[in-house]
Length: 271
Length: 257
Image 1 (cartoon, each protein chain N blue to C red):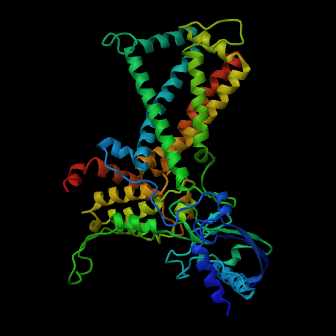
Image 2: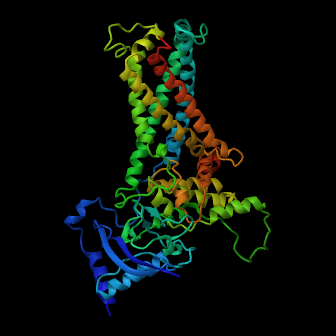
Image 3: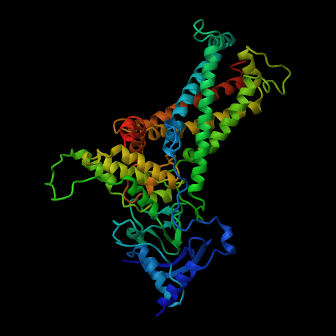
């Protein structure tokens, strides 16, 4: 009877202490141990302390930034009407709600809102990523065969990080002007929005970077704009079929609009 | 009925929770295509026992796809290549002769490996304990259909109630999240009139209990694809919605206790 051999070796393996070769992989706990213990916090922090609450923050900050990206793209379309139209639009932004508010005030309020949305989005993404890493400390040792997870959903962190890097460049390029005319003979001039755009995007490498970054933004939006509905619990059989279409359409509109600008400059349509 | 020849099995062997473990390769010379996947492992174990080696430990119980005990990551897919099927109902006709089949246990921090392919799924019990129940009057059995439930509602609740708690959703999720399981259990009760009195306490408690053990949902949809009962990710949306409601709408009501 071979069974007793089996049983004794099972028992033996249960009482032997962890040995040197187990360092190869991170050890799992002996029983299902909680990753974190909950404590009571003030109301909004309490909501944010859970993964579901963080996803709400991801979704709401995502919606705010989607709104920004859409209007940013629509505003930039003015460059097809020439230098005067675009520069005038930039001035209009400074005069938002003027004279109720002083010049630039509304613009700074919007900027403050956007920066806080971005920071919330980043913090939630960071802490959820860490949580998810801890939730599977030992990866599958064989190859995974994903059934439905899309390229977009699986690369959210990467597309997000690259778009963030692009955002930093974009601000240095057109807001601060630091990198605007590097490598050319001209210089950045504050207020000359149209000329600044042409100066920067006339450099093929920069134009290519803008194109790539905006395609990645589109991939990020393709998953994000759909994901919002799930995270916020907006699920209804009457409109569920439209959610995918909305996300695809939104991402497409943003990418087509934004990618057209560097191409138009390189092609000489905007000059 | 035909037979498959010459199968190579790469099976995960791990002597205990703290052991590192490794793949072990075994050959199975012949098996009927009508054999289930667990019967393949039975055949392998018989071989091993005859060679006086230790048998591969794996979870199984009803072997008819309703108990949720069997698990196994087969070739990188939870419950193997056939959709809407538990491992015990997966048959060898889904494979070909000379195939190499990689078999791994579920992997998640919350599901530590007990031995080989067997994992401890008790965190699911902790989630159920937190709120996966209704309070019912004891005593004589009430008359049937005393509480009217609209047919679409009972169907939707039944769709969620199909969950057998096998853990494939956690295993398949790239984040090790248990949102589909918790969502299904919440949706099952929250959709029915019997589940209304504890609706928001339940949602809050179960979501927060889930949070202690598992990762977060990033809406890949892998869970639903792996689910042997084809539970839709709609239950996750319902969970998210009711969790918000538990924090906002019913905050006063809940904090009264």
